[in-house]
Image: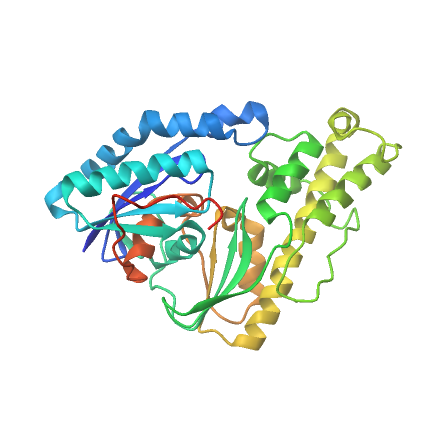
Length: 348
């Protein structure tokens, strides 16, 4: 079964063809991240306009790369939510139109759940990918971490799963972006903070881990604020100093130490919860997914401190992509949606 996946939840326009949920025949991503860098974050209107410009060429490229014509496509899977409403609308309206004109079933996919299914892609002839040898075994424990979502999932099967805990405020990727802005590092914040942290002392600044009633919930807003207050104190100022002035007052070493201390605390928050969840739920496999799953230090610590084998997607499948959308649609055995009525759900 060959599924064409379409993903437009944020600033990546993506299309991919995946066979039987595991064999990736193509994976095309056009990102507008460079357009947003000047603003320090994604501008929804710019993202939506970019999707309009490139979505048809991206889909055509995905079909061409996979050597697949429309007669060989069995279904179209598209991200219905969560995400930016303008971005989602471009993908869903395109998928609806193609479903009607090509007479193909339309499958609506939850973007956050789909991130985990990047770990189910185990085969491709595309160059430059490092994929797991085998898909996750159930029951499985999952950590999904990105700019918009941070949550721990427990999967009994593809159809039976629940959220053990999630962030109560900022997602960890969002915290990375905000700390990057405090330190004057470029957007996106995840990679820039991680690179800066390599030259810093992770124990230079003591930062708090929020104590919550549910041990599997997260809170990163306090950590972000603690970094701000620590930076203000380092430069000899109080809380009234605007954060926009900090980059010019901090030395390179101070920025590296703050970045390293923040990253160490954020990762400890995640890993500590996962170790406890592993002990309680005894999974057969643990999977990591989402944009922050590309962080090498997070991967290293999870692999070292968990007894269960850790599955990580290829770096190129951590950020938003359509291969995960197609794989999720296959394994979750989604029912066909009405192509004349399917709407977007930004807060799905």
